[in-house]
Image (cartoon, one colour):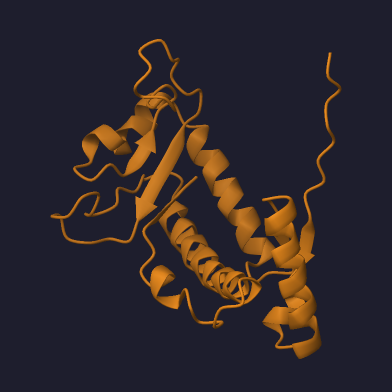
Length: 179
C-alpha cells in the first residue's frame, strides 16, 4: 500500500502588492510563480475582500441552502432560459458522457452579469425572496471577488514575465460565479 503524500498548499500574503510596496511586489511575484510552477495551487491572504463581507456572504448562502427544496426550486435553473439560479443535488454529473456515472452530490447557485437574452448563457439572473438580503450580499461579494481576480491576473502576468496589464481585457467583463 502506498502511503498518502502530504501536500502543502502555499499561502501567499498579497497585502504588500495591494499597498503598492515595490519590494514586496517582487517577492510576492516570485512566491506566486513558485507556487504555480511547483504546486499548481495556492491560497491568497491579505486580499481586498473584507472579512465581514465573506462572513455575510457565507451566512446568506447557508440560510438559502437550508431552505426547503420546494422554496429553492422557485429559482431553479430549470426555470431559467440561461441556466442561472439554483441547481439541485443530482442536477449535474461530472462525466456527462458516461451513462454509468452517478450524479454529483452537491447543490449550487449560479449568477452572471445581467444581460439581455440572446447569446449562450446570457440573460437575467433569478433571485430568491429569502433570505431577504441574498441578492444584495451576493452582488457585493461578486463585485469584490471580481476586483480581486483582476489583481490576481496582474500577479499572474508578472509571474510569467509579461506586462502587468496583459490579462486586463480577459477579465474586464466577468462571466459568472457559482456558490
